[in-house]
Image (cartoon, rainbow over all chains, first blue to last red; front, top):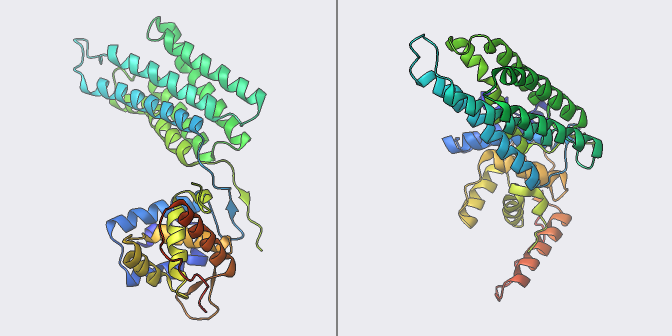
Length: 237
Length: 108
């Protein structure tokens, strides 16, 4: 239980930690309560209420952001499913993995994750920012349409994809519309993609690394459903 | 119909339930959980309860009862009673019911 309480921000624990501990003594936490505490800890970090910490005005996540989250989720699932088919399908006579189905999934994943990032990384109301987002989305879709043939275009797309996604996440972080953990996730995903590129057809470890952008896409989707933007600091009354 | 607590998102309903319980007087958190369960049939999880308390406290709708002992008790502020009363009046206007309005003055 103390591990769950540590998920809460320090300022929150200093203010409510004793009271929560007293409540849990009176009312031992069920599994549902523990899940509720985890959700509460996430809320306390995203929407801090304690004076001296940071807060963002609570508002409904816009429908456009939810749709982009859906694109990122579908893209992430497509990417992971593509990798999974390579794990599951039998190898060819030469010992390679069958890539025919997988490339479709990677292409779809690349287009959708790129499009979602293009949209989510833009600052609302910023024309220049929106234009950049549209360009990133279009490039992602064009790259995906070029896959899996011809090969050079697909390989080129895989090389450009990390640059675009990391660039988009950095821009989103700078604009205050994406959190730092998304930047970290896409940097790691890009490293995995590049490291896995040479050999993912033959080697399980390389294939696992190659699948990282799919998980980054899922994290992006989950983040878009709860993240309201960079918080401002609460001034104590 | 819009609610005075709409901007609290998923904490809007728990906020109304907690304020309603506190109209009967100061309560410590576990008493709030018990009474919300008894009155509304809702089992407020601990994460939801403290998320709600933190919001209500920040909005100055409830306050801690002064005292050194733990756990702290919370009570309704005048603003909290006024907000709850306005909310319940809006609900009553929207419903063709003749149910009496409860006394919402904060008990001390």
